[in-house]
View (cartoon, rainbow, N blue to C red):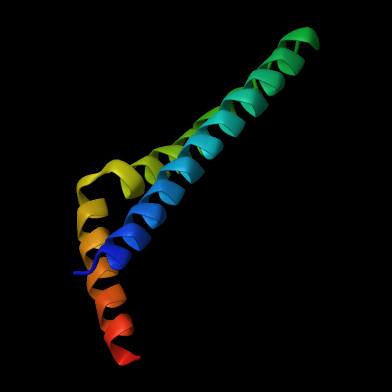
Length: 89
């Protein structure tokens, strides 16, 4: 595979990782605010935990797609597809 194709793949991988970290940061900020609002209002029901758990499941799935074992299969598919598309020109 050419160096240009490797650079494209590396940039795509960096974007995937960066997107996950942005997702995790927003998750932390928003859920901290929701928990604070829930605490300040002194609600008997901790409704903020529903958002924390629900969004946490989504974040875990995102982490698995970026860092889990299937991410390597996706990367290999991307490499093959890039090579295929570059040879069409």
